[in-house]
Image (cartoon, each protein chain N blue to C red):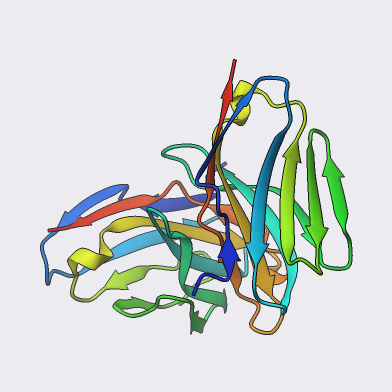
Length: 112
Length: 114
C-alpha cells in the first residue's frame, strides 16, 4: 500500500521553462513533507520541505505547494536548468509514528 | 568532510550467505536509518534508531537485523541472504531525528544476491 505516490515516472522539460513535479498521499497523519533530489550513483540530498500548517514554501528557484484538502504536493522549479536533471523523491513524515515515507520518484530530464 | 560513510559499495552474495553492511557517521547525529531502493518502489525504510541502544522496525524489516552500540555506527545485517534482497541500500542520519526529515544519506551499497 503506497502511501506516497508519484504517478509520473519521468518528465522532460526544456531549459528555462518550469518543471512541475507532483505527489499525492493518502495518510492524513502526515504532518511534514519534503523533496529529495538524487543523482546516479549518489545518495539522495534534501532539497526543500513544508510543514502541514503552510501551503507554500519557497527557496530560490524551488517552490513547494501543499494542498491538504486534496492530499497533493507539488514542486516547481523555475527556471529549469540542465543540472536539475535527476530523480526527485517526495517524502512525508507520519506524525503518529515519526516514520519518513518516500514516494517512488520522478526522473526529471532538462533538455538544453 | 566524511558525513555518512557506507561500506562496501558493491557486494555479490550467494543465497543463504550472511553479511553486514557498515554505516558510520561523524556528525554526532542521534538518528540513523537504513533504506533500500528498488525500481518502481522508491526508498523503503528497513530499520531505524533514535539513539545508541535503541532500534525499531521500518516498513520492510524482515530478513534484516540492526544494532546501535555507539552513536557513530549503525550496521545492517543480512542473516541469510535471498535474491529478493538484491537492492541498493542507503544509510541516512539526522541530528533531530525524523521530526523534520532532513536526512543526510550515504552514497549507497549495491548488493546482488545470486
